[in-house]
Amino acid sequence: MQRIVLANAPAGALVSSVCARCIELFERARVQLATDAVVFEQGGLVLPTPLRLDSDERFTGRGQTIAFLDSGFYAHPDLTTPQNRILAYHNIVADGLSTLETTDPASWHGMMTSVVAAGNGSLSNGFYRSIAPDARVVLVKISASGRIPERNIKQGLDWVLEHKDEYNIRVVNISAGGDGESSYLNNPLAKTVERAVRRGLTVVCAAGNAGLQPGHPVYPPASAPSCIAVGGLDDQNSLDRVRRGMYRSSYGPTFDGLQKPELIAPGIWVPAPILPHTPTAAEAELYAALDAASDAELHSLIEAHKAIDPDLYDARDLPVPLLRQLITIKLREGNVISEHYKYVDGTSFAAPIVSSVVACMLEANPDLTPQGVKRILLDTSERLPHIEIDRQGWGVVAPRRAVELALALRPIVA
Image (cartoon, rainbow, N blue to C red; front, side, top):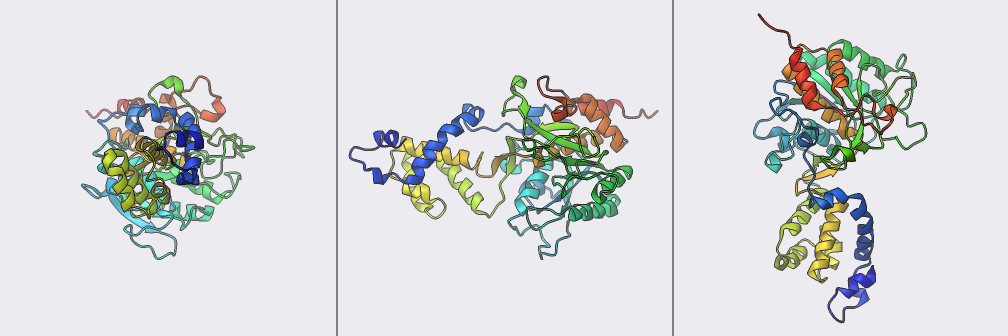
């Protein structure tokens, strides 16, 4: 690879003029060109979720409230512009963060899950909107770090149960897993999930990302019988259904022998917002600006942002074609779609997609019970013909069909 770089460098260029890190990045590009093939084919475009799942845009979650239990949140413009749809923020962690305007290292996860479910794509002119861009949200912070103790999840769900009528909460999204496998009959968190469903809440849980591990365990709360556990679909960022396959999501049987997950939704190539005011946001802004800049502007832009990316600064004297390749690699390495968005993976982001579909179903038919919601989702899902049932459950969530059936079951008022 070093020979290739030098062959394209100006005459007399020295090996030492090409930074070692740049050589490493060019080497890794070979792998990325294979694994990110569809993204490269589409010029870096990641398809928006409503398009990939063919959602019915007549229904947008209007009038519905989704509660999120997560490690941290941020008042992202996709939730607050032009109207603030964040009804409440509650922090059960004694970390002093009582406002959504302040970020901490854990804020990105809950910000992403809530925007994946209910974001309106404000910073992308609506392009990366969710399936339920008019839904309202209640945000419950249950951890100050990435690891969330099971007792915190239960405490957050207890709070939602206490306030569900106050905020008209109908859906709860839990993109977090418990401490280990156990029976739902004696697990406090699973028992709380069952109580929440009995009290009218549709509880949607991420199945987990342990599909390649021995036993591929499904932990509470996803192992609770009445929740909707969501595994991951890998559609390869394509509308071609032949390409559909599985993400490495956890699957049952559970400790109690239950089939989990019930459904799958995109668990990779999911567009999500970048947490503002962070080094990641600064890098994304720089890479997007360089990608859009003219050849003549590249050098001055890199010079002006030396502190953001020393690699690019060290490589600033490379020929423009190689510099362009390096910028592309940087974009791919950071999964950057634009200055405000990146693509992410994990069942943490598959679950909120299903939560957004549920919000649209309840908009279409507010009389649905959690049991009715689950039945419709399973009856309308699409099985992948070449994937084991244990891994995919009833198949890929089908938003349009689910909403149409919900609407058809709405009581006729004489």
